[in-house]
Image (tube, rainbow, N blue to C red):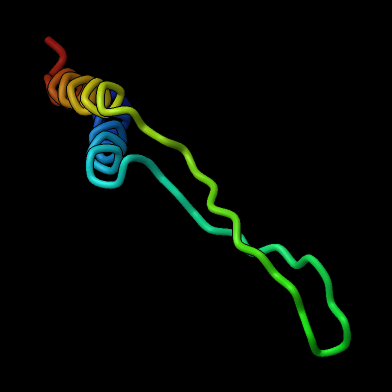
Length: 74
């Protein structure tokens, strides 16, 4: 498969994730204090938000790249 097709598939997957979950998010735990066996922690949610317009552009651009990448050179 040509590089354009591979990039197209990646864009399609990113667009679908953007539509389904609104982006990619993860949670990290940070330790605030430790007093012997007692620990004080808090969680932070971080991530990358994808607006629906950007997700749609990723899907459409990915489809175009897959079509272009699948064509044979003449």
